[in-house]
Amino acid sequence: MFAQRTINLNSSFIRDILAVTQQPDMISFAGGLPDPELFPVAALQQASMRMQQQLGNRLYQYSETPGLLPLRRHIAEQLADPEVHAEQIIITTGSQQGLDLVVRCLIDPGDKVLVEAPTYLGALQVLRANQATLISIPSDEQGPDLEALEAIVQREPIRCFYTVTDFQNPTGASYSLERRKGLTALAERYNFWILEDAPYSALRYSGDPLPSLQSLLPERVIHFGSFSKIIAPALRMGWISAPREVIKVVEKLKQAADLHSSGYDQQLVLSFLQSGALEPHLEQIRSAYGERLEAMATALTRNLSDSLHFTKPRGGMFIWATLTSNESTLELFRAAVAEGVAFVPGEAFYVNGESDNSMRLNFSNSSSAMIEEGIRRLATLINDSSRRENTASALAY
Image (cartoon, rainbow, N blue to C red; front, side, top):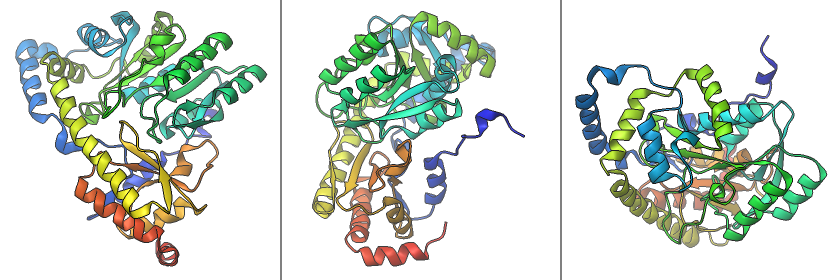
């Protein structure tokens, strides 16, 4: 009845979880959500008034497929790598659309794509929808296992490697400079594309920034940026920066998909950026999220040091925690929801559902007090396995 490409099309595990966690008094560490209390509402309202005064009725007209040229220029000059030009940028309806367009541009059904284990589940959803053959390689706090990667590409050709280099979703890990250079060297030697997803790069709370993969190998790296985490997700505004030959094909796919991303939202983002409001806003959310990261790391250490281990990231929105036992975090999730706290079980981030004793915890969308209480509830369950088993068996969702 339906097209072949829909056979492996699954609903997002996190979207399903979020439906479960929309309950009164639920403390949710599940979504990758910025805090709406910190959205730059006043600055966006002022940006809206300015653009309406300046553009009038023109604000509501069709736009061009690649995106507003002034917005692309601003991104190229202020947010992208120094060697990227406006002609190498296309505006997308969120970075998720950008990834889908690029995958459709590069991947034929059955083409092999490498991902880390674990990796962003939204990328797995896009790759499966486009009928890629997925191969995963191990990864640690420094980045992917390059020996494992090279062993695969020596044995069989791969088309792409997908990654989040800074504050990875779900682990929070960031590539070391050595791994960045090693990965780009392999991409150049074995002729595969790197898809560099960077929604969290601006959310650094400690340490020094490292060069992007695109800056190290611009001819083989396609970079995805987003305003969702740093301004507001509802705008659904992202971008791709890539070699011109890739952008030309992606532009045709974009035109076929939706003609162009919302011209209204593009003008709003442009007005916001031109006002200089982004940097003070980033300073505010970095300060707030950095404090929440400290609160969660401290609470985990104080309450669960014998029951799980984690590495505190230097930025982003997530802590990845692994139980010292081999107990299933999916079973723990069921019990936790009944106790009013939620997270994402780790198996959702693996190609074949491996590592079922890990969990992803979001700290950006909860106050420090909520984090303290949520971790206390989790600790009670983890440290009382008999209570957890009884609660889980009684929970239906």
